[in-house]
Amino acid sequence: MDSGSDLHISSEPSPQHRLGAHVVGSRIVVRRLLPGQVGATGGPAFTDVLGVCLSWGDGVCVVRREDGQEVAIRIAEIVSGKPVPPRPPVRHRISARDAEQHSLVLWPHVETAPIGEWVLRSDTQPVGRLIKRANSCLAIGEPGRADADAVDEVRAFYRAREREPLAQVVRDSDAERIFVTAGWQPVPGGDAVFQLGSLSRAARALRPVAPLSFEQLVARPQTQVGLTDDGVRVALELRIGGHLVATARAGLSGDWLGLHALQVEPELRRRGLARRMIAELLDWGAERGATTCWLHVESDNQAALDLYESLGFSTHHELRYLSAP
Image (cartoon, rainbow, N blue to C red; front, top):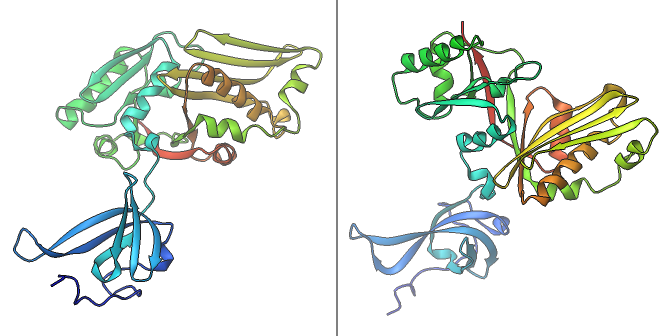
């Protein structure tokens, strides 16, 4: 006798799950009964199916698994199930620590030293003000020693170089708790988000002509565009009448392009100039094989967050700087 012949087939969701026609097109996980099979404990056998629901009706639910295979499941055999969030893009599956490692390329003269998985960073040839990212301990992961000893090593490293001891941590992480327990405090205005996006998608979003195009601006008398390129890093400057009005930098680490130091004089903002500067950097990166782009944005800089959201960027993780007491 067919082991499943006595099962009643219904197109309505059972009380054990939250599935139905409303999940078509959504990513779901389904636990189904395997009629005629015995489980490891001697009872009924079950299996799970994860994928996108393609259809729900006539007593059958069809799910396309992530390997591309389509699985037809009798609705009467569904034991439990629920919608699940979409699988994040490949670039978002990288750890915060690995993502932050790409920032080191922006400063070629940074001295580094490990404390377990933490990385001490100090710029040996700073220009102008000290950049916190290049002069702080990237404290993500395990320090590989007692908490107090790790904090003391961070403090000693920067004191020996006559620098303020700083730590950059992922917000609400174990590393943040280690430093807070030792009395370290958040740096005012030091909270930021790591934004991550597709270079090609951002480039497509930049295609519409801005109110004041980059070409129109640089064609004006007394306008000079400077581009410094060493093959790994690029710096873009725009001057009008000898006055620096906009800057932007980028660095290439593998196929990751990091954007940095985008600034536009207040009187020239909201004319599309920032978007044009970004487009120039993306073109530079694309010519060298970049596919992913990233940047840091201060958490309270809503204008910048709105700009990058319009280009397809999203937050990968949140960061905070802590200073020693």
